[in-house]
Image (cartoon, rainbow, N blue to C red):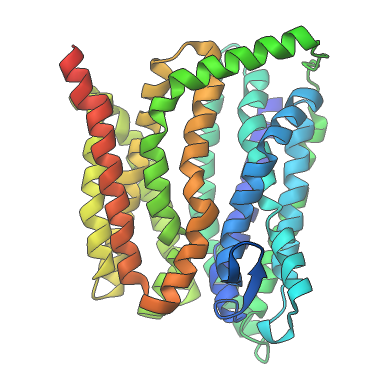
Length: 416
């Protein structure tokens, strides 16, 4: 098996395992009673465990970011990816072993939170090491082919795994007739943890030229200086993703729970719905470049993001599950269509040596909202439900569209 095929096999197994394991995580938290279980957090008081479990991985990922960056530089991309697989697997095992709220103590709640939060550093390692390894594995055709195949495979496997997650949960309920309500989710998480742990095995067969080298103090100082210059140029690209993340973090982690609580959607239906969202997102991503060629790259970003706002408002008042499902698919397609266009524009405006910093800043800004957003959302859900949350998210999206329009469209026309 060729080296690039080994990498794609790892990506396929990883995406399948993570999708099956985490799709029903929020529903499993709710079934365990974590929506009403509260633990004391220094400086912030008592917060719901379900919110902390959704915020914790993002916060852990942010804190571990500099260490992960150093790990990739010092160890290389392949060891970093292997470590990411094992950390993801450990987080899924923590999810599988999570007890009911009636049996949990503050100590075990913190252990659970720490275990689930391992998925944050794992994701950071993959975001940093994946592109680097693909560059090393690219053949004479260059990196475009491998990058495109990796993205397409992730979308396809994600869609299939969403269907599988819903089907497996249904099968477990039939087989385990006298089991408790969360047993199917435990089994899904356990199976996924095993698959994710094994996902790194194809990487063991890779033989790569070592790219690690000691960095003298003068080189480190030069890198820090270059980093600050890159950040100064890239900061203009952060406000839009930041505002979007503030809104998205309020409802995206709870979308499966929204369909369960408001429309009593079954596991199989939720799996099918998320599979369709993955499919429409993939198709929309392919349409994005054609839209950019017609109206302009940032004009396309602003247009698609603006069209997603009415969808979000409509989702807040959707009367039936089919209507809500259609709205969710259209909203997801429109928002995700804009992401590659935005990142492509950012990279086109910066020197190649600054590309990793620019992409890192954009993705960091797009993650900021998830540090506190899920916890805030959990508090709001218990008080006012989902409708105000979706409307607040729509307001954040509106502000993001206005900022992007002013910075990249209106200002560009004034200066051209």
